[in-house]
Amino acid sequence: MKKLLYVEDDELSRDAIRRLLKKYFVIDVVKDAQEALEIVRKNTYEAVLMDIGLGLGMNGVDLSKEIRKVKG
Image 1 (cartoon, helix red, strand yellow):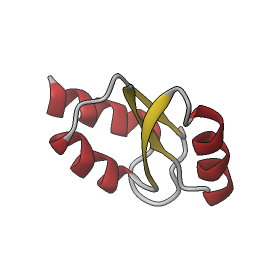
Image 2: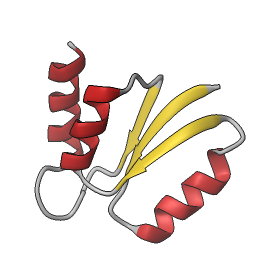
Image 3: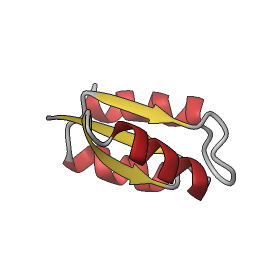
Image 4: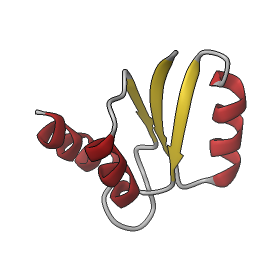
């Protein structure tokens, strides 16, 4: 099954997406950009789904740029 990384700071959204997509993907869910960067260094994903506004710290656009550097 394909792997998906979902980055979302809102708990209700994390739960909803996990329930909706669990039969299609193995889903790793993290709540912020720092956790996302740590996990992409250790795993390979077919897709990354993320919130554009991640609260404190890096936003979704900046995180996308950093993920590309890691997986470059």
